[in-house]
Image 1 (cartoon, rainbow, N blue to C red):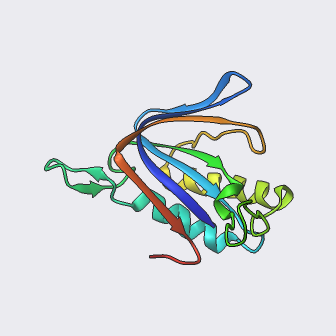
Image 2: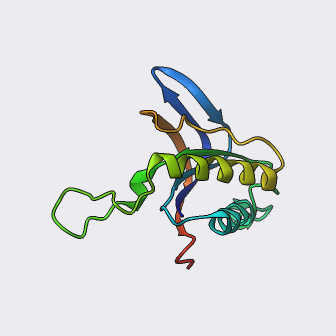
Length: 150
């Protein structure tokens, strides 16, 4: 499982010209899955995301989690995070889980995130052509892979 996480002042997802999800300050999480990802990857990633200290404390030091900061999380499924550009110029998506696998994985991930966060986690619409808008705060952007934690 691979994510790109961005600390945001706000973020939203629009599908067919209508906003389907939005948050104020918090984290925008773009999540991609491989076919062999499972509950262990989901649990590790959800726990890591809600505990990451990406928000400023009284001294302006990134020392508070999204939970401590009272922030929100917006989750968007994004299979392109598993692109391979090793050969040629056209990305290969062969490592990304197919929709029938990644859809349920994404749903379980969102449920786990909501449980860890203590409130619902809005999402885009799985498989839809989405327009994601955000105001990156910092900017703070991280990539995290459950199989290669750094």
